[in-house]
Length: 112
Image 1 (spheres, one colour):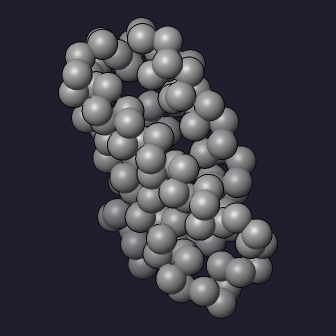
Image 2 (cartoon, rainbow, N blue to C red):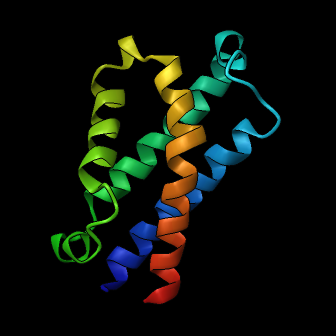
């Protein structure tokens, strides 16, 4: 794996960990009244997606179990449709998708 890919993977891990920290002790309803929480989570997801978009095709192909296209697509949706963000989708992403992705990314970095 190239040093650039390793660096981007680390960015993905750090952003995913930050998102997990942001929601610690929180519930879905907290998104309705805490815009700062929404902004923080959305930004973390955007960073995960932006870093994923910079991972080489070689690394992406070698690790096809990671849903690269979906990760990048989520980033694009958040950035380009910022006016129509569904808090329920954001919550599901941060509580269901990111924990699994974080495990995959940590295993990938540790195994290389």
